[in-house]
Length: 266
Ligand code: DON
Image 1: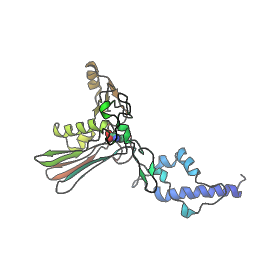
Image 2: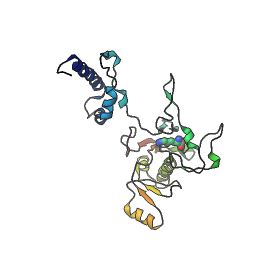
Image 3: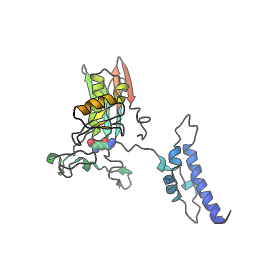
Image 4: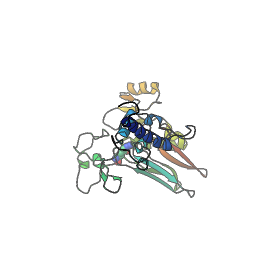
């Protein structure tokens, strides 16, 4: 393309339109809002945006919107925990199972179908996407619900809701919730500390303890001496959303080790 040829200026103008549409939505003082710099400058994003440009035809600006590809969604199951001033509590775990579920949307609805079938033992004795090995009882049968690890939990004290929590994390949900409520109940931790203290996970198979950063090397060595295989690091195990009702106060806490609790974080 020659300098300032129509073909060149067309592509330039179309690129500018897309960039300015993104600017209109996403750019502002980063002290106030989170600007998705990494996503905006991602080559893969540029490649997707490039496909929106027609080689020989201007796309009216009215048909151009800020890049929706950028919308940051966690690939995880959703946990929300709610309480009101009367002390009523709700803990809800909601999932499509894998990210985008079955990746099939119901036409005209925007609703994605889940792939919860993966929670059945598709092949009894084999491992599913979470590495869970399950038996005959959880095999696929008509009208049967797959076995879930989701554990939205409300702990009562003196007949009143006291501590509500829950987490995403597939097979790690159960162990995450277990340790969070043990932290609160047995170790007297507040809602925040209970949800961010280093966790471990063991799901029978594979025969290993998964340990988060923060489990001391000394402890790991002692566990190994006891015959445990310890695998260190990786993603934070689960992400709790908790509320504790304490001395008339509702104390809410997210797992801040995954950035902002609500955004995709690793
Ligand atoms: O019900 C279950 O146990 C799974 N379908 C949960 C999936 C899940 O948590 C995925 N990601 N975080």
